[in-house]
Length: 177
Image 1 (cartoon, rainbow, N blue to C red):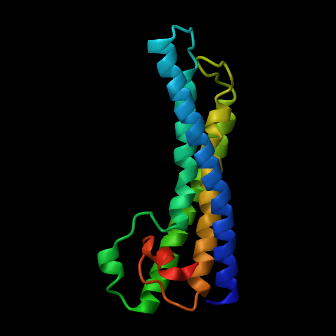
Image 2: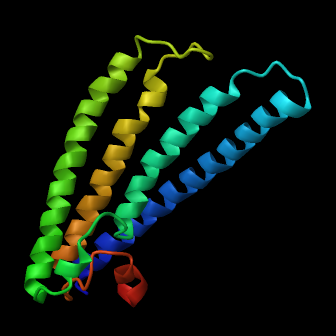
């Protein structure tokens, strides 16, 4: 694997490690929040009303951030049946083309998400009465992370010594790390 492809892969995995830690933290908070909601409703009669809204925002942030992890491990949609039957150089260009198309999509989502977030600061959440811009900020943040990962994976695919065998996670498992 060339030096450029290797460095891109290393940076991609480092960035993904940070995102995975954030997702696990959000998941732990989500589980604790839901359990508190269940306890407050059925076991201990506490007047706790924030758990449903917090669970919603934690789940949205976690799911959006996890998209970039799916990109790292090539767990996004790919047509393996056709992709694996093509010659190596065609697979390389097809993988890079998929990365460019996805990058364009997430870049547009990032740009429009910033406006969406800014408009959200003029509206308040129902229970917390905080600006909705904070929960909405997950959209452009997740799109930015996806763009970064797609750029790093695209660089890896383009400069790699080997042509990609498949579009899925088997590429990572096969030892490309």
